[in-house]
Length: 94
Image (cartoon, rainbow, N blue to C red; front, side, top):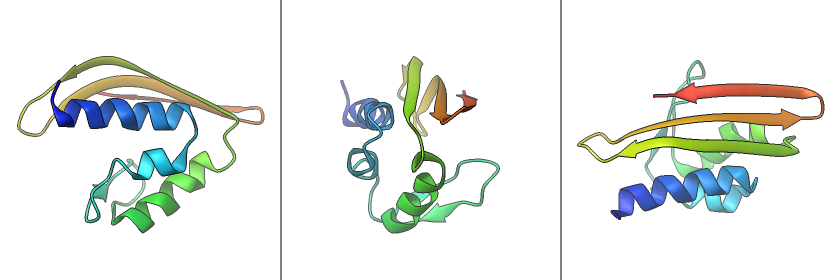
């Protein structure tokens, strides 16, 4: 398994564990994070701040990796949801 695929799997595991240290460890210091429709941010500190906005109050998170393949830009397909008190937010990426 390549290091890129290992990193994606670790990122998903970090989200599922609601572990900000594991999540941010998956990003390079100059990484760009773009969670549409929010603005893109660059750098681990900025990424941590953005992710904390929606993960900070999460009581449960479940991302399921549906497919993963390695290409020049990489690709993955996942579905997930975050529960915060009584609110559940779902998402899909392809």
